[in-house]
Length: 341
Image (cartoon, rainbow, N blue to C red; front, side, top):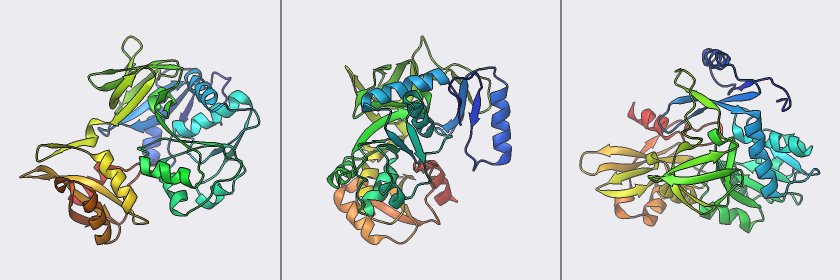
C-alpha cells in the first residue's frame, strides 16, 4: 500500500513479469533519485517499454479532480478490480485516501461485482461487456462507474445503461496519472490542445519523466506540455479522442478506422473471443483478417453485413487465445506476430 504522506518512492510492476524483467526495471528506477514518487511500467503503440515516474502530488491532483467530478463523499465505497501496478488501480486508492473513504478490492468476478455493496467503481470495457453479456443487474448502492483503459463503444454504453449500469465513458493515460476526461469533458486540473491532430496536455497531474527502452531518464515535456500518442480535437473543455495513428489503416486507398471496426465486431461476436488484424496485401495495401479461438463463420457473416465491401474480413486464423493486457486491451501487434509464425 502506498503511503501518500511519506517521501518513500514505490516501484509497482506486473507480478506476471519475469523475475529478470522485474529486477531490471527496479534497478532502473533506483538509478534515479526521485523522492515521493510512484514508478509504473507501460507500453506505447510502438511497443516501447516505458518506466514512468509519477509524483504522489500528481496522482493526488488527478484523484482530487475525479472526486470533484463524481461528487465523491467520505461515506462512498470504491470497488477496485483493477491492478495496483496500473494507474487505474492506483487512482482509486488515491481518491479514497483524500476523502477517508473505503476501498473494497477483489479479483474480477462479474457475479461478485454485481452483488458488491459499493457506490463507485472503475472498469475497463471488457468488464462492462462481461456484465452485459451475462445480463447482470447492478447493485442498488452503485451510483457511478468510470469506464476507461480502451475504446468504449456507443452500443456497449447503451446496452449497459439500458439495464441500469451507471457507466461514464472516461479517457486517461499513465502519463497524466489516470483520468483526463469524463464523458468528453476535460477535468479541471488539466489543459489540452491539439497540435497537428496530436493531443497535448499541461497540468498538475503530468509525469515527472520516464525511462524508455532502458535508456537514461528524461522529461518529455516541452514548456510544461506533454504530447501524447493520441490524435483528436479540443474545443473549449470538450475533448474528442479519435485514436492513435496505429488505429488507422489504408485499404485500397480508403482510410479505415480500426476502432470503429472493433466496435462492430464487439457487437456481433457474442461469447466468442475474437479480434481483427490488418494484414499486408499486394493489391490493396492492407486487408482485414479475423483471429478467433473457435470457428466463427456466423460472426464473420454478421460483421461483413455491417461494413463496407473493402472492410470485410478476408480470412480467419484459429489461435489458442487472443493476447490481451492486464486490463483486457487487445495486443494487436502480438496477435499479428502470432498469426505470421
